[in-house]
Amino acid sequence: MTYPFSAVVGQDLLKRSLLLNAVCPALGGVLIAGDRGTAKTTTARAFAALLPPIHVVRGCPFRCDPAAVWRECPHCGGREAVEVETIPAPFVELPLGATEDRVAGSLEIERSLREGRPVFQPGLLATAHRAVLYIDEVNLLADHLVDLLLDAAVSGTNTVEREAITLRHPARFILIGSMNPDEGELRPQLADRFGLRVNVTTSTDPRERAEATRRRLAYDADPVLFQGQWAREDRALTAQITVARDVFPSTLLTEGQTLQIAETCCEEHVEGLRADLALSRASRAMAAVAERTQVMADDLRAAAELVLPQRRRPKPAPPAPSPPSDWFSGPSPDHSGTTEESVTPPGPVLSLPKLFAPTEAKQDSPDRGRRNPLPDQPNGRSVRTVRHAASSSVALDATLRAAAQRGVGQVRPEDLRYKLREERQRSLVLFVVDASGSMGARRRMEAVKGVALGLLADAGRQRDEVAVIAVRGSRAECLLSPTAKVPVAEHAFARLPTGGRTPLAHGLTLAAELTAERLAAVLLVVVSDGKANVPLPGTDGDPWEQSLVACSRLTRSNLRAIVIDAESSGGGKAEELAIALGCACHPLETLSAATIRQAGAVP
Ligand SMILES: [Zn+2]
Picture 1 (spheres, rainbow, N blue to C red):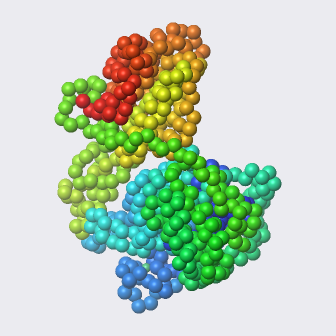
Picture 2: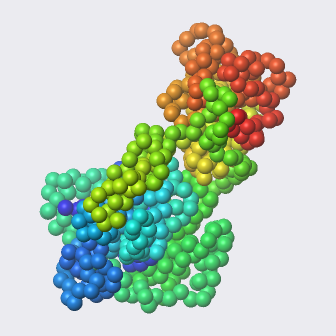
Picture 3: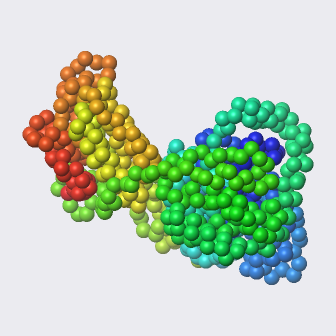
């Protein structure tokens, strides 16, 4: 039982985006961004149920189209006649914990061993062929899996090249990803590869919300009855998709419109041609939905609204307006303007070597030495298998596959494969910044912001995280929780609180708490003059003594520190702080990537 698509209240932009992909799957799917409880999954499921049924070859694991059987299909290839079956358009959900084998397919061990030749076990990408492929929380999916999916989505083919298997099979699907931006953005390169993006929000219209609740309750009480009540609307939409698919190939953009699209993309500083292509396709699909072959100005405007926002510089996107009109009766021209905000450019992009690079042969400071997180860190997810013993755990499946590809029922030592695990925790650079006082505080905060964003711009590739604790007022505040995402940091730095007294003890205590459980390496950067003058919240102890106690909590084997003296004259409390932390003290002018690079590098 699926909730009827027509019964979803509001969410007009989302519905329109999905419809356009139904008409033109080459659009590259939809990225849905929004809070929990905005019916993202319900709408995606409902959308799949709306698609016209498909004809398939019965029993084919690659879901071949009887009208155009994949010639190399291990199931259908070479058969004289195939049996045809009509099935509802499939909805395939990709679980977050899926392995690369599960997604791309792998060797079928048992049959390979028995038959003495490699037999391919199709993965989710084969199951997703001609289906809707849905990934909830796509921003949390491992990057290499997202790459794999988007490659397939763009090329319509899944390429498997590993061990004994070299195979390309068709994998054309409508990709729908959903995410909660509060939990981190997708890398811009990946977000760019989704054709369209829609930001969904819960309606702020009480009547609309009440209607959504009423319908949901009615559905839960009697799904069959409820579906029956909406069947006519859903059937009409299905028919509309069928017609629009027929019209789409004949739709045309004029020379002028093609140029207009290019000009718009130039004005928006969009890199690459993906946006231009998506705009062309989306506006043609808009026309096809309206059963027109000629694209109108409104089609272009409405398409731009779905294509461009994600491709501007990353920033928290404004909620998309939802026109009250029927979403399929055509776009209303009055909501094409999107608000532009100025974006703080990130600090200078620094070429920081991987902060916690693997130790070379040097072992002269065994107790304080930075350690690269172990490759077989037990809570890491196994992401790849290798032939050499990089870790203690044998990858049983890969080993059997290696044996199976020789086609004999016996495992030999040379078949052994080992698991290489991904580091779950990233290295962290944690700033504790004195934001108290007025004059210098603002300057210190701006400096830290610049360096932090610079580190992140680099860390986007390096996979290190940055966090900031601001020390001011009656208690310290975690201004930026550990993140590797530039947009999250930019959002946090939109506000730089300064002024008041100096709760340094609380700032250092927060730092100790934040890092206590971290297995991966931490670099603590304390920017302060060391003049603590506020005791821990709820105590009346000596602020300086409390700061020293916090420092002792911060001296651990996986944590390094550096103190940046915020007082230009130097020689004061900051140096004592550095001694307590067992680290060096530098003047404020040296707060830069270079200082941090040195402090973080392996001695
Ligand atoms: Zn087949």
